[in-house]
Image 1: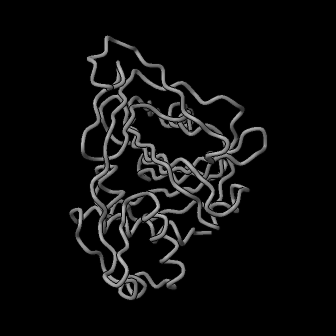
Image 2: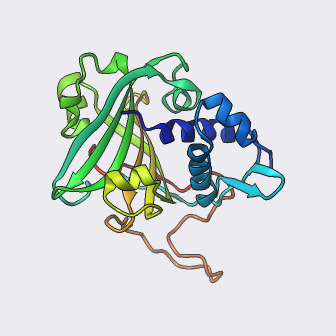
Image 3: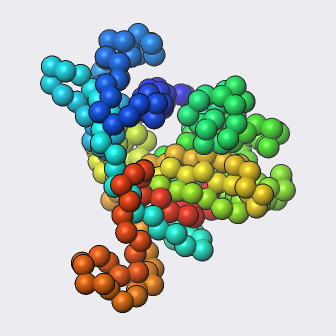
Length: 257
């Protein structure tokens, strides 16, 4: 099962990344023809990107790349594993080219063959997250869906001798499509947290790119802050000042995969 909505979203994100804020993107008719999808499918993906602040829809004029987001970077020595007994169910496992956008995340050519995996993450038997993993196939020869039912990072270490060492991760609020909500057992347009993470080994080689949706009603993030003396301007002590580009970035991972 390939989630068609994910393919449309990835294409739109590639289009957005290739344009500046305020630039127009192709019309719905053009995009539907390019992707071979229906207009409702395209509009559902566009609606999500509008809701998350990446696109702006102007009546009678079209769709435009949204203004750049405010960034606040949280840098720490790592991230503790999430609580709960986590299990995974593989919904899809296939191989295919990286494409331009994911290729950039993994620092590989768009033609590089990756293993693309969609997993449903559960704790206590309840679905909590929908996760899309992308791994260079050359790093994980013989990888099977069964091997992804448990901790993926442990599998990398124990079977392939790859030790994930660092990760750059962004976290944003979003809403769930009908298909995503159905898999997670919540109503359509329910709030969620979108995790976008690239993991590297000790040598700085990218070994994994993950895009995951966590249920907003069941998942939260807690930060431990070192508080210094405030400077009286209302800025939170101990926190970096916001920068006017990118998305919220944090070093570390939500859990051990």
